[in-house]
Image (cartoon, rainbow, N blue to C red; front, side):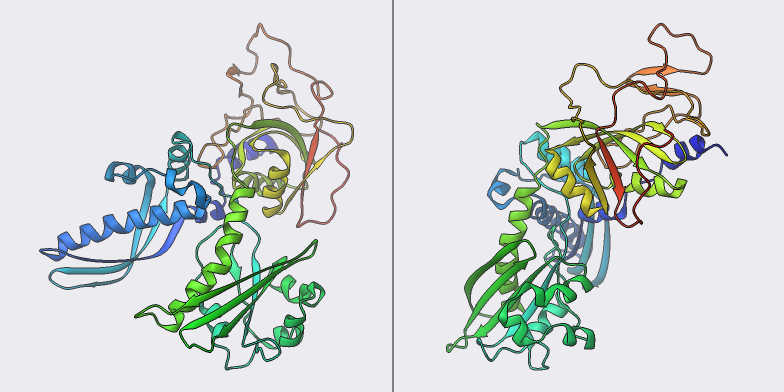
Length: 437
């Protein structure tokens, strides 16, 4: 089968599972009572979906903009919710309890927030490793059995924010990598090995110290990064009536986590009022290589569309439309294990230019061609492409042998040069870009 036909078929694949996970809210507990269990179940499911939507907005929207999110009626919820799964159901004649997982339609959520002018982010951040120390300075314990603070972090499900917080499992490798004294000394070099093990770059040493008053828990956390000075914060958590230790620890964890989550959301807002385009070359070694790159681009929140301009067995030239600035795009692609690099002596072609680069619909030496554009839909998945030999780009359709009144197809050397290149981080260094397009 010709390479171009394989590429056309592959472009119908869905976006990555990680993008869907951003719009899925888990662990929503519901409990409703009514005249009968059927009514109670309906009330519980409706309220659970509303709670899930609020948690999704808290995940995506910076705290200062949450008040601008409008209340959701049942009709709006129906448009937003994609599916609901139910676990741990319990019921009586008049009461219904369950735990819900609610999936939302990304395109519907984006449309709602854009229509009401609420800025939001959906780019996931790299994991942060938490080292939970328990006890006052000089007496803190890390791996010992008498560390309820570490036990809590090890079993914590997380807040569901864009930045995941992970705790070490505490096996022999962890114990060898860092001890309580090293954690208290606070040198990033002490944490590099254990951070790498958990796929983290930043490390938080989170100390919990019971106060003289048993109803008070003192929290001090310091975040360490390889390229910036440590950042510390301190807080006190007061026990609330009816609260157990796990609930108190959860409130303490959220005090540590929320400023970081909000900082990430602010830094990665999708600015739909700022859009740009660029041409990029992608070195290829196989069809699977192209599919992997294409799916990673499809799962990148700031990418609006991906249009193949030239494809061969060794290289693709694509037009990438994105929101925000180039620095945000670089960060977002890095999280998908892609490096975006500017080529020497080139400039970005932005969306404000009057003339877009014309697609080349010829055949590269030794390969077929994919003439169809492959727009990325609002849901983040690549749309359909036409069959081999038909081009439908920028509203113009061309079939083999059909006469056209427009300009002739450009040869491989014509048209704007690619301004960037996109390289997979998880592969060995690629051959120099600029081979047979």
